[in-house]
Each structure stands twice: as C-alpha cells, then as structure tokens.
Length: 257
Ligand SMILES: [Zn+2]
Image (tube, rainbow, N blue to C red; front, side):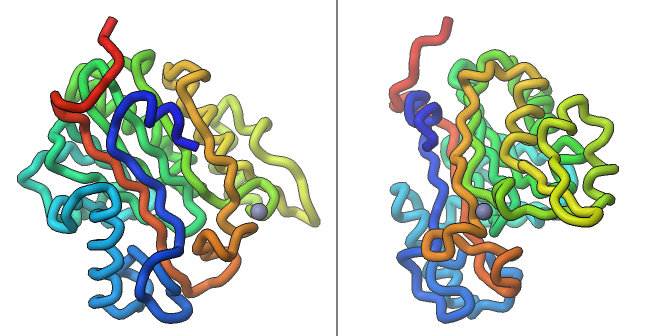
C-alpha cells in the first residue's frame, strides 16, 4: 500500500501478526512490550522484524506512546532507546530506525525526499484529536526545514470506519477540526463510527501535504484477525510495528526540484 513511500526509495514497513514466536494471545509477531508478553519472545520478534528490513534490533528507536502530540528529533545516538512522553519521532539520520507500535491506532509514516528526513507517528482518536500527525509535519519543518508540499505520507493498517464505534467524548474532541463531519457518522444510540484513516488523511492534507502524496492502507485491523492484532476485537493482544529510516546518500531518490 505504501507505494508512495516505495517510490520515494525509503526503508519502511508495516508488520502483520505473522512470522513471530509469541504464544496466545500474542501470536505470533507481537512487537509490543507493554501488554504482558514474554520479553524474550518480543525481543526475538523485534529482531526478526528489523532483520526483515535489513537492519539490527539495536538500530530501533521507539516512544512511550501516551496519546499526545510530542515529537522527538532523534539521531544514531538514540538507537536502542525508548523516548518517554512522545507519540512521534523524526530523524534525518539513516542509522536510526523509527518504530511505532499499534493494534488499532493509526500508524503514520512520512518522508521528505528533498531534505532526506522521515517521521513516524502513533495516532489513535486522542492523538488524532490533538493533531499528532500535523505536529510531526511541523517538527520536520522546524528540525530539518521540510516543506509540507514535499512530503510523502502513508497511513497504515488501523481500525476502520466499519468497526470503530466511539462515544460522544470522541465527537467532542474532534469537533474543532474542520473535517470532523466527514469522518463521523451516527451508528446506534449515542454512538458514532469514526473513520480514523480519513481523519488522519484530512489532517495531513490540511497541513499542506498534496492529496496525491498521501496513501492509505484501507485495511481494518479489527476485520482481519489472521493478519492483524486488534485491541478492540481481542482485548489483551499484541502490537504491530510501523518502521521507517531516513534514506542515506546511496538510496535512490527522485531528484529534488
Ligand atoms: Zn472493520
């Protein structure tokens, strides 16, 4: 799905739940450490996921993911670390592999082929409401001079508008965004269905990224139990990862204009 990122020639991946060693209810490629899985299994799974993109587990940088909009700027010096209090990472250092973990929340990956910078964002409804993806676009601008019109973005597998029923608190939190009516529709008695994919797509477009440069996987984590973990569907479960690293000078990139 991330054809736009592939065209940009950047190392990236959205994992599924297949190919790991964890036992139920984390079977099998659980990459999250917070839900109670065997740490040795998670470590082996992470090593496999990083190896699948040609990198080592020690290259990974992750965040604590607190449903906010803080974005940390990282370099090779942060490899192996978990940065507290953030839901986004941005980097121009090819040595660092940025990792976001999710099991329904939207993972967003972005690249600036001009400045050779990347970002990874974790956005559930709270993160979307506080503008996590937009904050990452601003952070790329502040840290690297990235222009929104140069960015390429991909929104990975997340719970879809088919399954993501939410309450009035979510409607109220999203109400300040001009696109909120386009991403919510009434379902049953005081509940709404939220299109988290479209909410993030709208937010990224409104921040200045061209619509043709934003790809959406359109894959619902709750609808695909063989492919994905889903917290909403399963409760105690594993986490997928979205991975991305800044391109180095050897990687093929479209010429900067
Ligand atoms: Zn669904």
